[in-house]
Image 1 (cartoon, rainbow over the protein chains, first blue to last red):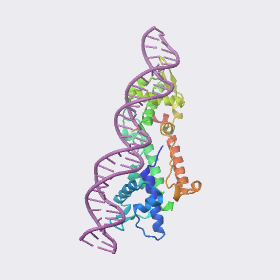
Image 2: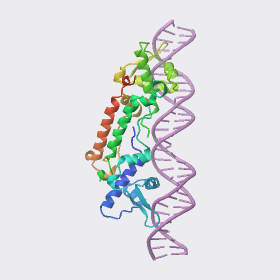
Image 3: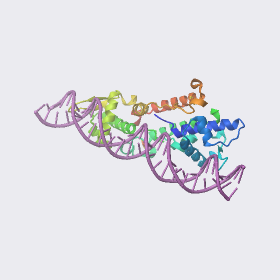
Image 4: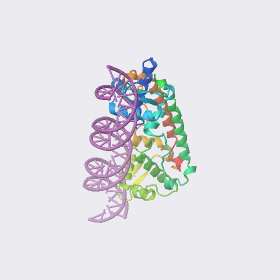
Length: 135
Length: 135
DNA sequence: CATTAATGATACTATTTTAGTATCATTAAT
DNA sequence: ATTAATGATACTAAAATAGTATCATTAATG
Ligand code: FES
Ligand code: FES
């Protein structure tokens, strides 16, 4: 069962790379070319995912010559669950079984409540995995 | 983000139906037709999933006239996680990010360890959701 | 101010996975 | 022998994922 999509995966690697190279005091504006050369990822694909991160205010982007991307949030404020949400939507287990007949009173449904709880704790745990914690 | 596939979903509903009708003391061999009529599910699809459950020793099956399926395991011994595993494979979060460069020593990888732990507790929780608990 | 090198936006194609169907073989009751 | 069920497997359709192509916009810089 696949839990993490390619976008999420590549993105996390790119973010770790960006964080580590800006930590080293190097320039913190990095181009897509630099990232994909370093990590061996498909360029056009990566461009699209980084653009999305910029729209979500995780990165800033700079157009034109000498442009590129830089971290907008700090590495400790970007967690795995943020990235999963952006590319894969909310982690929500309650989408759910037994519709209709078996469970007519959705609001009272005990299964739903339990799944919700499980989902919440999963979110919480994944939220602790930040880019900073991977450096 | 979809966590539960159609097979898993339909199957859980079918199992709850089967468990509840055998609980009522009614006959416990039930045909696919009865299940899909009751729950409004696609028949041929359902046949295939129930056959798979039989192969996995969750159901027994009886061929021929008057045949059908019955629960082999008791409702309290069938959990959501069992069914997810059958149709969707293991719930495994460690498939994982940062291959190659960033994380050369796979065995020592702290991220991997943390994801593994999270996956284990998720499994544990989903394991508590049994068919019996949904009756 | 033209050139160059970057991202922004969006449409397109290919691949893989999921969902669902069709069919024939086998089995057991009557 | 007939009928009504599952077993096995191949097939098709639809949706999601992965990846590409292209043109527009922007900013540096000689
Ligand atoms: S099981 Fe789905 S609403 Fe209760
Ligand atoms: S992050 Fe994948 S092995 Fe460590």
